[in-house]
View (tube, rainbow, N blue to C red):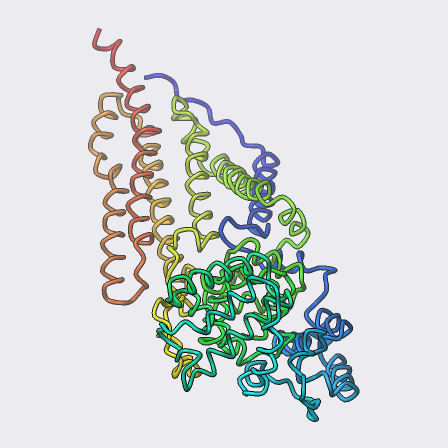
Length: 551
């Protein structure tokens, strides 16, 4: 028998230094606020730093003599709890008392002159939804007379759509009961005439109007008229015109109108975000994609400032709900260099896990490593560190493996008829929870710990055989006798998967295939490490020791 290898002392400073460095790197990885498919609240706070808040934005609108938009933004400021809301409310009330004549319209606009022809100024300082005024016969006659002399071909084309008798959801404008459609057509035409529409939206509406007049079928233009009716019944003139300046297509107007129907309580938040970012399209797309959680995320961003709202609607990702300490100093770095920050985060975790595991190996399993020196001593820590990094990646990216589910704000193809427009009954609630629940995390952690315990048990058994003091042939037979133990990781993995599936069926834990099949994955990795890294090299050494005796 070859002499046993000496056990080398482990310098306490070396393994303690590795342990401390590994713990520090793991702390950096855990606290760095960056994710692949979600946005950390720390990044929202950093993006909103030194940018105007909701109340400040509302005051800016008031200083531009736009009290209508300022009122909606002020309501959003109250919703998100902006600390400047109270003093701004006093300023707004004083402004409303001093300028009662323009309050019904949400401000003053030279384009209002034709609308006010022959009408006295309103005596009450209350906003008037623009269609509530325009549906009256006097307002429509004044507006029609003004628009009839316009030389713009687009204006005349839109006016001619009133003669189209083939409609699906409106009563034709020239028939009894057609006042709503007539008012919406005149409103659309007037918005065109006074250039209150975004250029791309203006071009799209003109194309739809030309098609409607040419075919005698209202077609998609009627959908736009219905959406404008929804908005015109809730917004005053300046509020509506400011919103439509930021909407680039009829699809965006349709999304905003749909959101107003199904979630009218979110109108101030939606309106404020659209004006602050000057991108109604992105705001509508975000809310349609994420539903009520998206509205909560939008409120959180509004509470942080304009920069946070822009960051959220630009990234179009959900906000993580993780609570606890965060590496605020790393937020600016993660915001400016998100790809590099992700690399630093997961590289730090990989290096930290390796150093931590390697330090524990050097302290607890040094004799086993010396006995099995033919097997690459650092391979086990590296593989386990990679496996732990993968688990950390899954835990810290809860939205990565989740498919986009339909939300309660999803646009429906079947639009309501005009008679039911005011009800706006929202569709059935759909669960949009996308974060990984605690039972899944505990299941995966338990399976991982079981396989780590199985791995350590196998190492100890190999070390026990090596120290037994019997001939090499006997050691080889003892190793063959322990094959079932070395395959134990697979048995534990299969049992864990079966147990998890049964518990999911019984409703003890939430259904999640990742939690169930992770047990099998860990078992395969454990057995592969034991047999390839330890058992096979050790048996090879024993076989080589037997060759001289056989010769």
